[in-house]
Amino acid sequence: MPKVCFILVAGLSRSLVSRLPSPDSRFGGSIADRSPIPFDGFAHSAPLRPVIPAVTCTMQATLATGVLPERHGIISNGLFTFNHPELHPLLDTDSFPEFRKQISFWEQSNGLLQAPRFWSGSGLRTAMLFWQQSIPDAADIILTPKPEHTPDGKTISACWSRPADLYARLVKDIGPFPLHNYWGPMASLPSSEWILRSALEVWLNFKPDIQFVYVPHLDYNLQRLGPDHPQILTDVAQVDRLLTPIVQSVRADGGVCIIAGDYAMSAVSSNLAPNQSLRRADLLRTRPDANGKLLIDFETSEAIAMVDHQIAHVYCRPRSVDAAFEVLRGLDGIDRIARTSGEKGALGLNSPRSGDLILLSAGNAFFIHDWWFSDDEKPVWQFSVDIHRKPGYDPRELFFDPVHKCISQNAALVKGSHGLMNADRTYWPILFSDVPIPLVEGVITAENCAAWLRTLLMA
Image 1: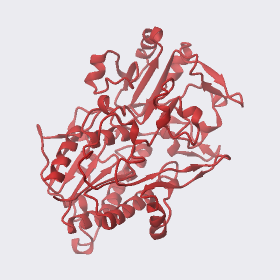
Image 2: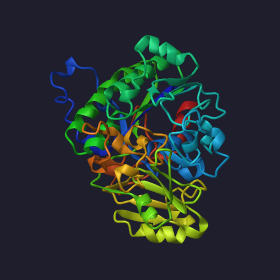
Image 3: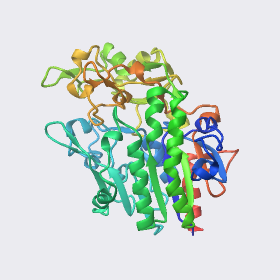
Image 4: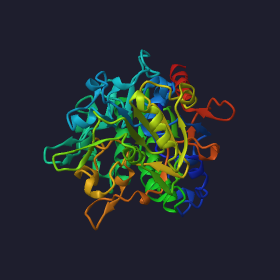
């Protein structure tokens, strides 16, 4: 039975890899002067068909369970938790509990999955590094960021680990995890470098049967600059180099290495704010916070949009579904709205956790969560990196406004987004493997990966 290392590289697509220079010219010098490059060294590759939405948490859940989002329940990077007390015990309410019991993004509890992972009951020794929904017992070895939030608003870098002393041991060997390089205006290569160094330590010292690793680096400039910017090829080459040591170690141990993307990034030139439209129609209502800034009033609102890249789940009171539909279908940049169970099922999202309406943007657009009509209405956390109080994913957190000394509020700065499934396979994720890939009509689907991995591990 071979051991498997599965490395998920955010935003790694067929289109990006196809644009790389030839191996002989990529870094200059002769081939003898450099280490083998992972993307050149795999015997097999194939298009990986993502799920909708093609976002981090949803794709990771499908890859690990082998089922669509409507079955595993991770319908986006966030969950609508208002009036869902059954979800509240699974939320990390150590920080911002009021907000997390309304809409909560980036929750880590393994209990949120509604389907078992493919290794459940197998006896396999498993490791999950920087993989969502892993705490406390999704795997034998777990490492995931869990920063500490102080009362004065500061964020202290920390990681949650299983065994409990794993992170402390890694800090001693390779230093603390650089949280400021993992997300925000300073997000950059050091976070991925640290993750891959820790992954190598876990592989060598714990010898898992299967190890899952998430590498975020490509995600940053793909959103900041767009997928066609020349800098992106440099980023791909940097990730390529970082992967070399662990790929070499896995192969030296007789293991199987698999590298996959989770989504492909689309160039975007416009953004949509469905909550503003709902507010204008008096379907979304607000209340002042202690400083007079406007929060969503969940108790009195008729419809609220939870946005995530190129998809938005809209939650309505039954009497207001028709009204919300009429308001939103006229929003410029909407490709389609799924309303019926059949329409949601066609997306793989016919789940009780999904919105009453599911909005899909046009390919060149993405959603923002804003309901405010001016900066004066915004609470202070909107101007900061704050992934738990915002009821939506906010890519503007990648940009710093040097004039106002805060996170930029200009959504036009964002040049790349994801979540949809392009009809052209060139713009799907790519999967590289040391062993043959079971293809159906020339592709492997995200949901078929689990059965394939289980077969490899149980052979």
